[in-house]
Amino acid sequence: MRIYIRKTTKMKLQGSIVTGIITGAVILLSAFGPNQQTWTAPPSADKVTNPVIANEKNIATGKDLFIKTCAICHGKKGKGDGPKSAELDKPVGDFTKENFSKQSDGAIFWKLTEGKKPMPSFKKEMTEEQRWMVIDYIREFGPATKK
Ligand code: HEC
Image (cartoon, rainbow, N blue to C red):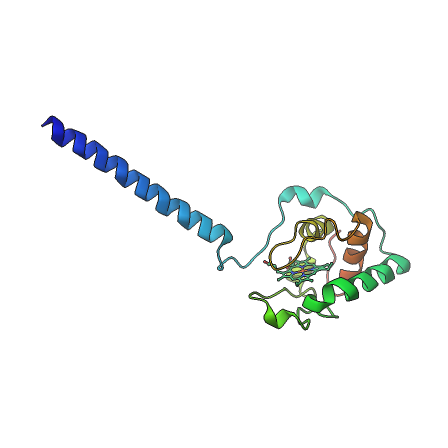
């Protein structure tokens, strides 16, 4: 009888470990797996406001940076059709769509800073000011603007 109880407890324990591993794997897959379509910045990113005003000069500098650094994937017009986009395993997104432009500058800044494979992080490659200027330029593509 005792042996029987011990066995059941052990089996239950094994069962819950297996369930735990499966649940963990499912959570990991849904968070980082190939099925994830949207890339969302944390809500705290929305509180960061753009210190670089979108005047002609800053937009022009942002355009230069964009053409040099981003257009290879994102396309000259931000439609996501840059020459390299075809080689990537996921769409790069379309900056002319409302879905994109409804994001705050802070959220876009966060994405540029962090990167997400295959999109590189621009934390080191660009100064904060340059990142904000690129955002000022990207805003020119879309319909609605959220600051
Ligand atoms: C090597 C190709 C590549 C380069 C270079 C690149 N990106 Fe990206 N970018 C991507 C990919 C791929 C995604 C989609 C990532 C995802 O959703 O998982 C993306 C996503 C983004 C997003 C988020 C889009 C959304 O819908 O919210 C922004 C903003 C962005 N890129 C801006 C830039 C800017 C600005 C530059 C230049 C400074 C740049 N990227 C350079 C490939 C690239």
